[in-house]
Length: 320
Ligand code: DGY
Image (cartoon, rainbow, N blue to C red; front, side, top):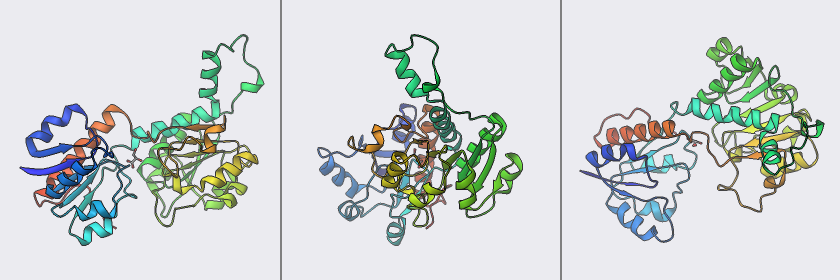
């Protein structure tokens, strides 16, 4: 049986499949205590199943002598040195598409929560301040009928566009490397330049992958172009936004709020100023975190790794 290492506990429903197919060593995150054991296991392993927070260091790479496949349970692979690994004939795979609907749900949750101030209202009720019907100081802003600008219209962006257009009667625009005709037809999404989108959207939603081109895409200049009433929603990667500029934009009232699932550094540090704003909602990179979706993603990651280790073409190879 092929030896593999898995860097996160997987859903119990698939452990049987794993044990049937692999000799496996599980690490529920590689910690200081388990690091040496992890390196020892890695030296012997042919495959790795990792998640989005796994960090490839030089030392780790030096222990990947026999590895043929790295399978990530995520769509994003900005943390994987794909080029270096492919030079060593290691095939990397990811799990696109099956997480798009769940991630779009959460992104929509951020849109609704920031606009309608749901966490603040929840806290107000639980802390006993709901003594009479609420007044203007707790009013939010409409989502229905507003304009949503989506930056990056891949499969997650498309799923957000559908919810906005069909469910919330929103006007949808998008900016993307290439036109997305299906979204234009199904969600009446209109292609705009980045500036047009920033200047006219009530909600600016980021669903681009992190690449050299998108890193730092939204900084102070971009915030200055946005409406003062606009809300930024980031469901992509933290580094797409210049975080210190976001903090400045919030302090100066250049935008009205932000709904964030991702950050420059994850997990977020407790001294990060973003945690101090009541008009910023902070989630722990939870886009795809539902039982069903994470199970599907794990299954797909296993199939991809099985294919690689048995010299078949995997369903989701990553090319860079
Ligand atoms: C992904 O799959 O890349 C997501 O960001 C993880 O939740």
